Image 1 (cartoon, rainbow, N blue to C red):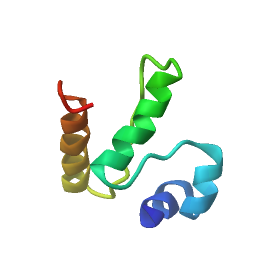
Image 2 (image 1 turned 135 degrees about the vertical axis):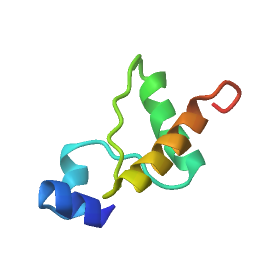
Image 3 (image 1 turned 180 degrees about the vertical axis):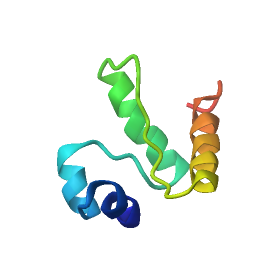
Image 4 (image 1 turned 120 degrees about the vertical axis):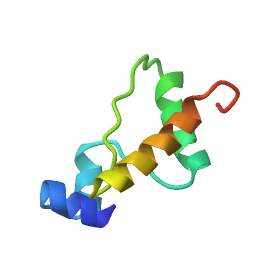
Length: 73
């Protein structure tokens, strides 16, 4: 994620985390972070996939989709 932050924002990850929400870690950790927003009333979440290439983005999208399937919350 640090390489992604540097490539896209020109800032280290810890600086980017000060100005925008970041959900990363295991699937359970990401789900818990996202659940915090929905429990606070969010009805929509916009996800930016933190990968530097298309294959990595696709892999992350698949993982994110898995978290939203019924029974996975």
